[in-house]
Image 1 (cartoon, rainbow, N blue to C red):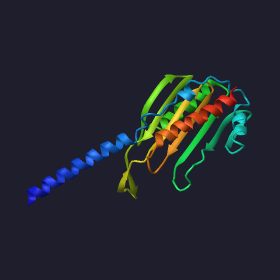
Image 2: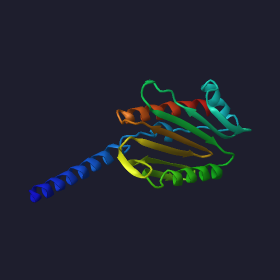
Image 3: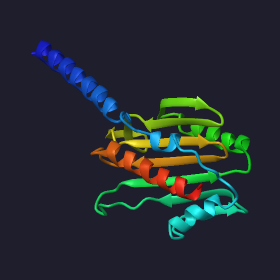
Image 4: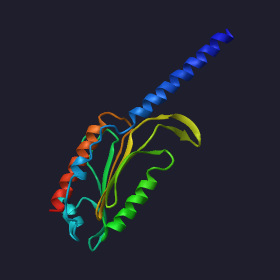
Length: 196
């Protein structure tokens, strides 16, 4: 009987490891296409953030003064019953060096602890990164309560004196790559119109 229990424990442990490995792969942002933004060329002058705000109908939170600062916009959720959180932050600085400093800070913040750097390319003043929060335990006062495999993804793109952050969080991972790619295309259109 004892031998049967030991075999069952080993099978349960193996199944758990396989499940965790599969979940880890499932939460990675494979297939995210940043080309709509990274291939853009635009002029981000002092009225750049104001032009984006006008396109959004004034719906973005605005922390800018004299064209320097940032906008935060929460992208609309087409399914109000699902808890999907999508956001875009657009920073504009008066120099590429200052925008690079924001990029470095955000990259450090989103490659810490549970966050993993998925991909990084380029160098200042044109660079980008994608980070994701890996499989983790949901805890209640430090006690593991379950395995969390939901996709939490941050994309940071530095374009000269502009730094863009696109965030996606969802309790379920269905079709999130398609949604993120749609968000990237939407942001690319905002940037192109504002910088023309």
